[in-house]
Length: 136
Length: 162
Image (cartoon, rainbow over all chains, first blue to last red; front, side, top):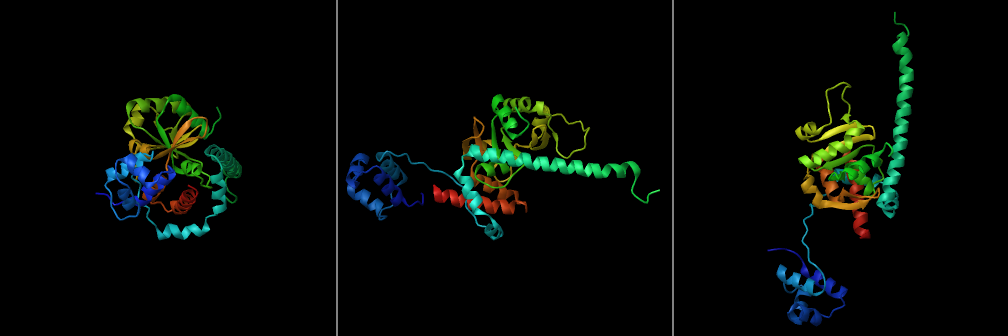
């Protein structure tokens, strides 16, 4: 058993192939009335029938398991703070361009960190060498 | 080769290592605006792949990140075989090697849910956005909440744009 609305699937593949219901039915070895009932949602076709209709329209029917999309109110609370313009701009780039941008930003961050460490070390050195003020 | 993330990836590709880009870099490749310093990779367990992995990365002198210097740590085949997940510093930057990730499993589980992306002239496997979200959610770290919000928005934008 499966619980999938076959109507839009069959209608979409038939229209994409520019076939009439009768043409699709002929190709799939069934009748126009069956295709009509499937597309109108009146009939609940078997998985095999949906596959036959999809194949007849020149498509493969694939089943795919995807994780449940759960919503988390805590995560949702963070969403208004996300700058979507940055994301939209990123989506216009290719993955290679995104990676290149990441590398540049990453190099800058690592450089800032290194400069910070060097500065901390310079401040710490005299303390280590001579002790803190007031130490005997 | 330079001393950067692309250096690590190029070495792994050249050695024929089977790996998947996960974590922050994967998020970035899916469009995240966050900059990450670490490279998180899921690698396939198994003798042959571990041999290739060690051969590719040993020249980068991997060492346990945050551990005191001088520990008897060797990045070699027995060490990787005996362990699973490694948090490393390398001469090309921080690298997390993951044999398994909470919520998504091992390489064989995740490889079915990857996108192929050309980012350095080679086709790299990148964990799908849905599965990245799943992994972040399963990790349950407070620092990931903002990341999750961004990833979910990205998913919505991607769905909308097909």
